Length: 264
Image (cartoon, rainbow, N blue to C red):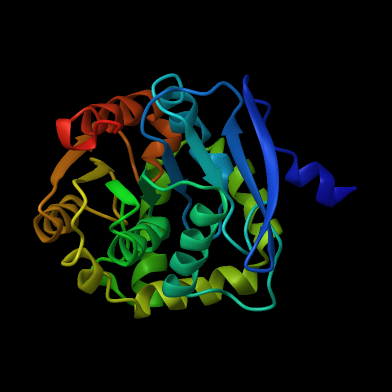
């Protein structure tokens, strides 16, 4: 009973849950039932969490673009492998998931650890990733240790909306604390700069002005490495895609409206 209560997705209007088996993992995704004729956006969540906290931005964006939110292996409603995937394994999985769903040209948005996965995917699959959004990307070299990263998360908490605790608690329960801890280790060992330098897709770097996990100097550096642009959302902390959904969606839609990102 507890598992079912914690795992039920919030019923946003027009959204459905779908499952598919990719690379041996039964995978859950949320999608809008009504198609939109525009570049699809695939949103990748961070570590310890799932599609759930991304829904405010996804819902605000979905009238302008098809939006798909897979739960990565081990998280949300997807199957839980017996080990925590590292960044490259998650990127390989998402690549296989895109192929399985016939998605041959997409925009990819990654938040926090999901931005590391998105950058690795963009480096791996430039043929598919037509545009990239790196929201509150980890891991800043200035705090690239477990202690440093966790410390920044605790420093971020006062800037977050307290209602997020319910979503976070549910997602940590689904993932299991050991997987969260292992994934933190994968994050701090990943040299995301190596992938950022090889990104060719037009890139938007997004973050809140109160974000202590991915602060502005680091986001500016990410934009420089990718040749992208940086946009700051006023009043938002690390989970800007939860607390500033409409503003984030507007910034993403503007980025995707650029001629280089138009549907073909």
